Amino acid sequence: MKYNTVEVANLQPDYLGFIFYDKSPRNFEGIIPSLPKSIKKVGVFVDEDLEVIIQKVEKYNLDAIQLHGNESPEYCKELKECCHAELDSAYHLEIPACAGMTEIIKVFSIKDEFDFSQLQPYEDMVDYFLFDTKGKLPGGNGYTFNWDVLKEYPSTKPYFLSGGIGLGELQKIKEFIKHPTSKYCYAIDVNSKFEIEPGLKSINELEKFIYELQH
Image 1: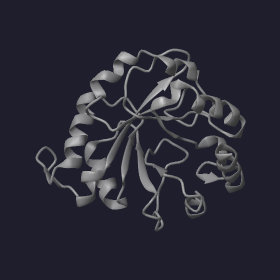
Image 2 (image 1 turned 90 degrees about the vertical axis):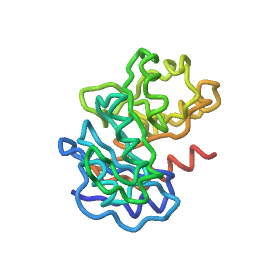
Image 3 (image 1 turned 45 degrees about the vertical axis):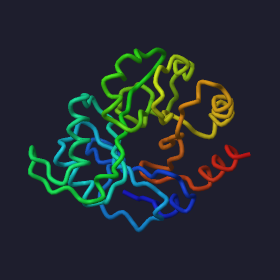
Image 4 (image 1 turned 30 degrees about the vertical axis):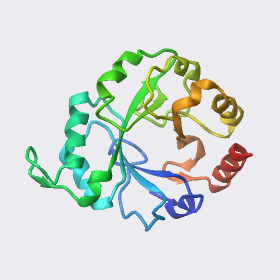
């Protein structure tokens, strides 16, 4: 698979994701090139064993963990403890020093409605929520959900807005950012709409997106 990680990094995103899910066409295998310290490396996982996640954190020096499956609050609690302990007694793994700073992002999928009460058990277990489009796949379905649902967002925890965001959504994003609904929107997550093929991004389209979003 082709990756143009360095070219994307040159656009200076705040986060850069690497998918560690073998059923995904974007599954990452290889070496992450040296990146600016300002860019946080995110490992994306789907119902993965905690041992595997911690090993990936150590191997790739990940700054954040994105959980894209049906991970329970208890699972997130264990992961959080692993990321903040010098030694995990359950798995007998030596935790790298960088893990103490590892952010945890929990993904929830939305279509036309959402029961926000299910977020409450995760409040103290994760650093951010991420709202994606509910579809056949855990992610990368290529279309947006109804952002009006977020008017009912009951939390103060910052969240990532994701799901089928591309050049065609620029005006919609600008309107969303100006609306009180976006008060706790921390980041805009883009992926499949900017792909030439899985894993390979269109730099020209990303540049245009960033420019238009800032002007």
